[in-house]
Image (cartoon, rainbow, N blue to C red):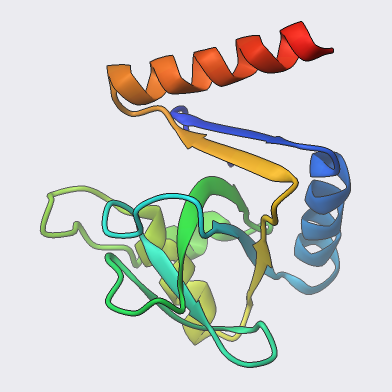
Length: 143
């Protein structure tokens, strides 16, 4: 699942997605993709332990160790059963962060950090959409 306002550019996107899909198919693991790029106070965030395993998910950051959760997720078959337990947030929405939290509680969540070779855009405003468009245009001109 990818949210409609998320653009991710990177060299090995397909490889990372295949890894997440294998985990979903083989062991029922959900995968969230993380970034340090944006203001984590605007996005759901994840905190990882020393081994890189997700230990906490919440709606906003309070620590520099927190990673922004991008709009790219892979959920295994049966996700609709977990989704039945998601309640509306204080924003009166059904949040994907809440669904990811359920997988974390069930010890069925893995995280992949998007490194420096990735660019993530959350295009939920006209300004961020313009920023993403300009970046892509510059990249196309270079190539």
